[in-house]
Length: 188
Image (cartoon, rainbow, N blue to C red):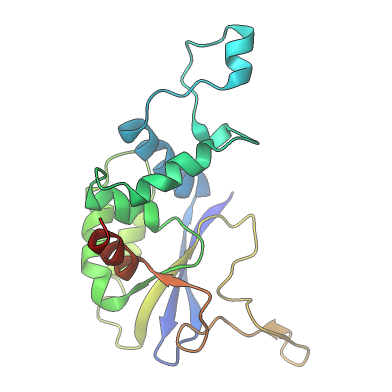
């Protein structure tokens, strides 16, 4: 079964696996569908309109070739979206990192987010590292069916048969969720 992977970054900045939460569908996809229901009007795909199948509940996550999923992701920038929902939604984005000082707010948001998601289980994993002095940040790979960005980022070492991990202190191909939210609020 697929799963959502959580990674920590140690004081040297290197990514390390924290753990996994079963069924990746309960991660990003569930969050996207939940915020879609809360903030966007009912979605009916063009193909459903053509065949007269307009009474079912459809999600923009299945709008292949359209911009439906982007409409969901754009809610992150919408000032009418609650902070809890912005944090939950933003945590599903590629290349997102949360620094340790923001863990309490992240955990609170994950526990407060309503819906059938794995966020509460993810919050438990994060709570387990609150006192770990070697942890400086956290990141996600939302679905195990793809290669994660964090543990296999660098060059492959034939001797160890491993790739070097992403280093959050030395590399710049990531963004900080809480800094990004604060910057967006300043510009509103």
